[in-house]
Image (cartoon, rainbow over all chains, first blue to last red; front, side):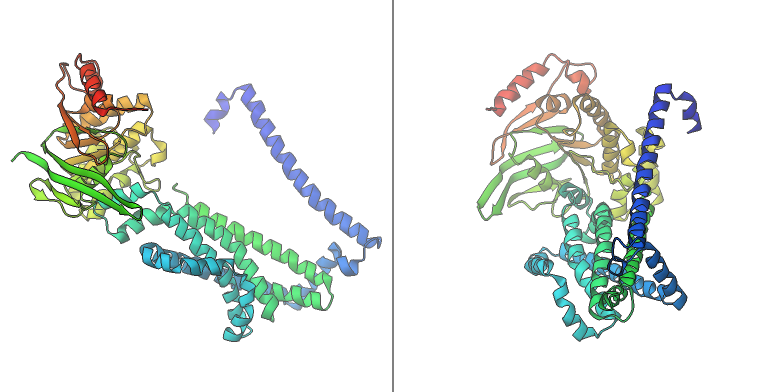
Length: 269
Length: 255
């Protein structure tokens, strides 16, 4: 960079400055909107122009969070939900990819199971909730099954399409070298599908959250979804709002975790 | 017997629900060691099918292919295949790309590694061996693809429209480049192309194929009076136009 700095023309310097200014302007606007909304919300609540019993308010949310923390339950709820999500996410991705591999390796199986996948994909997975509860009890297992139900089929279809989309000539090249089906898969199909798999991961994070919160709505005794449902039932909107905010932060962090993973895995391409 | 490739009465039919397609019919030819053969023909005349049959990737419905006197059944180890696109793997360095053949055949010995490194050195890719394909120009990529193909030491190279994806100027340069490497390594080559000029400039013999079902309509022995037989020089030879017109008429192209 330092070598380049010396050779920069004044026009280019001006251009870089402009780009930098724009970036600062965008960031400032983003933060300003957030701060303005919070202040507006708080002020309206303070002057009783809105009913903070129904809408809550930033200061009440903070108080709720502090109370949860003092009671020592805040991190337990976060931990329960996050671990359910991570397990659901990992299971969904691994199982989904594994099943996609099996369907890729046998066009017979792929054809046989195609209508089943289509039906399962269009079925609203919440409908399966009661079945899971009967089978696995009202506990974390049901919740993870819910998360799995939501993310699994999408993963299978996404990854299988990726596998099938690999250039025919690349596979022919491998065959010309005398590669067997396993070598073709390991050396060409899987590596060239990496972007598709990474995309499936990103979609899966979101879907796992949907599944887990849905599951917690149905059965749980702990977790962020439980806090939201409980808060709603006892009309403590402070608790509902606080939980939604925690959820937003946790989901964002996990999404960035996947992006970070992608950066590590894709350093070489 | 100096015929490295012999094709007897070769025929290929494809089946689909809409019926069957006669891709190739009654194809007969032989190729001598070190020869450069170009195959031209109208699109869909089964040229690529012929290469797949020669490589043993498809089973002929009729007739047989002999390579070095042995009947082909299953992917032949004496054959290297090159495609229109270079198909270098973006996730592998150039060095690891050119080693893929030996890696698959489990012949990745020190000797092979040495051989491949020497190829890279000889053909000016050694400094780029730790780069990724996206960091190379189109011409260099095609050269890397050729080195990948000859890394398994095949005697026969099958080039399926190997230059068609390149822009015209690059293509002329790559023609010369690849041709000189093939000659230097003393390989037998069979190039499928629909570029008449390219076929004359590179081939010892040009096979003209008929429309489907593809069969050999005519064989032209290319004899050019030019000091050095390189593809670029060949284009200046006085006989070049004669062959071009002959083959053009033979192909009988209508719009």
